Length: 153
DNA sequence: ACAGGAGTCAAAG
DNA sequence: CTTTGACTCCTGT
Image 1 (cartoon, rainbow, N blue to C red):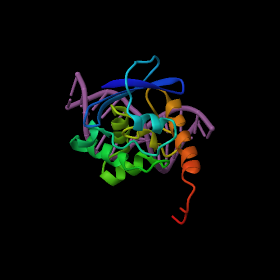
Image 2 (cartoon, rainbow, N blue to C red):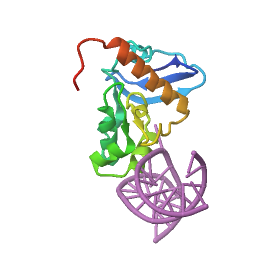
Image 3 (tube, rainbow, N blue to C red):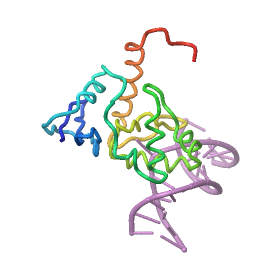
């Protein structure tokens, strides 16, 4: 199944199967009509902090890339990690992490927007504004949608 | 075998 | 502040 959904100046295209496994997510300029998983539309509308039960094909991928995608998938909503941090956990180099993000076929499902550079935001394809928009959305939602007794750390 | 990347850090201009 | 170079580890040719 496939379809798209408006998000800011872009449309988010998604293709997935009956197992809720996502094989492609892409940011495009014009709409492609078709259904979109409810959890994705709720996520992008700021009404949910996860995209369960959706999973990405990348999560069962083997090799260093698969490890990177699994690690990135565990970054909590509203938080960020640097390329370096991910690299150190897995005993590889930061540039490999960047490369894995660039070749991520399922952004959002694998939250590559939560991986930033040590100095600043880092990169994003096709447009850096998508990354900033997603991060802004998450920090805003995290505050409003999750007020209860959480604190400490 | 070799070039290069959604990075990082230190040193120099 | 910006630029440059060395370093790193993996991928595509």
